[in-house]
Image 1 (cartoon, helix red, strand yellow):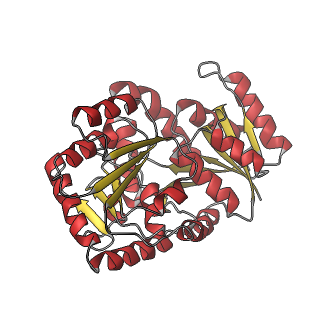
Image 2 (tube, one colour):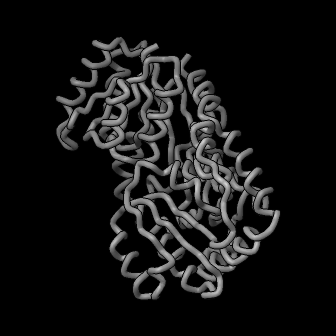
Length: 360
């Protein structure tokens, strides 16, 4: 079966990384089609001989790029189109393909909180009609979590049976191979993700400054984004630069995770899932996060990590201090094992099997 995954860009991100993993764990022939531009992940796909195509489409003049996509589907005898984007251009192109090739199977893949997608009047006017058109012609609608499904039912007035939940997955065995024994001398924390306000990294840095100097602690921040310079200045202003290391965008995240005690995900937005948490847990790393979105579907508080109910610097600092005591006790190994069990539960191979059932 020939499957086309429609995306916007091949730069690092949760969706493109998931599609990369799907291609590597599927028996089907998966094509990666990027409407706007390529990027480092798209390049990595090409190097592994995964079929890719970058359209460099114009955001405002869609006719040419629609025709290009249609020709690609015909030339490569595409059987299924999986639309991973809520953008008007991706939705418009998906509907056009279905109209031109009625036998084509279409999967609408929901990766985010629908309430956030249409949280402004502009988005309601521009995004909502296009998304609803795709959902109307889609053969199946997939949500990455129960939280995402619930939001879609409310916003787009879908029926419960219209949406199937397939949690995101990771290559458990790949990440598990990087698991290491960890020394308890210094509490090692890590954050991996984009650096913008709603990811809560500023709160995390402030919480580190609230922790007693007698607690040896090291925080690694992996990723980049519009807030990076501001966050670096904040750590200097709080005189904790010696406790925080900014590593920028890295492609060796699995190796980096192996040394850490806890993965901190302080997002203040309603997360659709949290794939980085599963990656960390696959290496036996318990996770810390606020009670947002789909986080409770991953973290069992006090078992494989901690869910913080109060969204504040103080609550986060208090939890981190608790983690230091845990690292020095036998409880840490138990939490680490529970994290590994959770990681295996979300193995990519099982996730791909569930997804491919929706193609038929």
